Amino acid sequence: MVAGLVFVPLLIHALGTARFGFLSLVWVLIGYFSLFDLGLSRALTQRVATLGAHHDSARLRTAVATGMALICGLALASIPLLLVAKPLLLGDLIHTSADLAAEASAAFPWLVFGVPIVIAAAGVRGVLEGQHRFAAVNLVRTPAGILMFAAPWAATRIAPSLEAVTAAVFAVRLVQLFGFTALAWPLLREAMSRATFDRAEVRLLFGFGLWMTVSNIVGPVLVYLDRFAISHFGSLSDVAFYSTPFDLIARLLFVSTAVSGVMFPVLSAAIAQHPADVPRLVRQNYLLLFGLIAPVVLIVIVLAKPALTLWVGAAFAEKSAPVLQILSVGILLNSLTTVPFSVLQAMRRADLTAKIHLAELPAYLVLLAVLVQRFGIVGAAMAWLLRVMVDLALITWTARRLQARQRSGG
Image 1: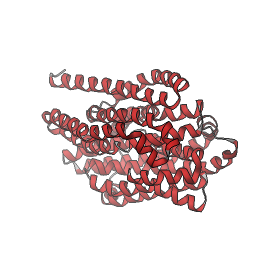
Image 2: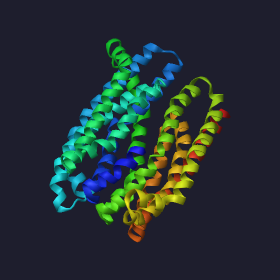
Image 3: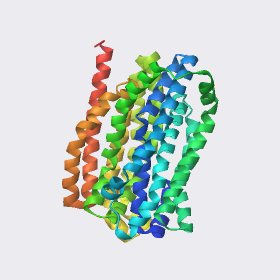
Image 4: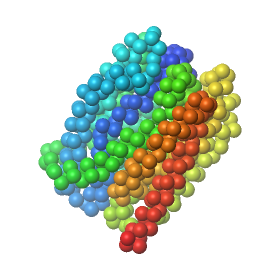
């Protein structure tokens, strides 16, 4: 968050609003296309946590070897698919002006080759989190998160072009992969040397992972579709006015990401060994998230316009402040949703979260199109807030119902 506060104004100044709008979409896409792992990284976390709770080291090695082989294969398969999709991505999804079209085309290969790096890194991170090695994960993620802002800015010192900043994002993702791999290397090396590819593990991982893939596809669409709607109905400059406050307040999600990152393998182990502990864990995490995030959101709502004026200037703040106020409430609700979401997935019911997201998508598409055309970027923020309110209600109700059925033996 601090890196964003420092480097976003510098990036906007160096690139201009249109190029910065493209960069914000690159940040979204290079992470979004990690969906090509078909949910296996999350499935691997659940599997490693469960087998660790049972102290089944032999099966653990087999699960890791099988899961990482599948993930690396899918990472390589993503490259030709993205190359074929270039006309769709740069023609229909990202609208660039004529003077930026050549730069966007030159930047595209860096985007393509960044995706398999992200997929492989997610798999290795899944292994680390399944072992509850959260300090190790953050040892890599923290500097990488800073570099996601600092490296593109450093690239603008050499060439303020879309190719340079996208190449910088690729380099950061590559360093992140090396870092995760180095920390997980003892288990990875043991798994590769002593275990074999196991068909039973393939079925277990894909049984969980394929439903995760639906959520991985639809979930980020629900989160980031607003930017592409703004690009379609407005301009890349409008994307910058919207994405800048969004990316700023979304940094608060590091709290829910941290909590849910710990909660998911802990819940998986608790469900396997001590199911009576689950309600207590859920209550603790709701209270923790609300207590940490709600006060910050209140401050943001009150100080949005003066803070943005000080940060990026009065003209930018005039357009972005209402967006920041609306989105901050949505971020709080979205953070709370991670609790029932983790419960369902720890119970191996990723199918339920996926079905909820599928049900939300068409209604959100209509709502977003109507509100963006009528109210511009403020309409996009309103649509996103309404969507996360519905999402929290549906996933909470589903998780509670499933837990009640399991307690009653249904």
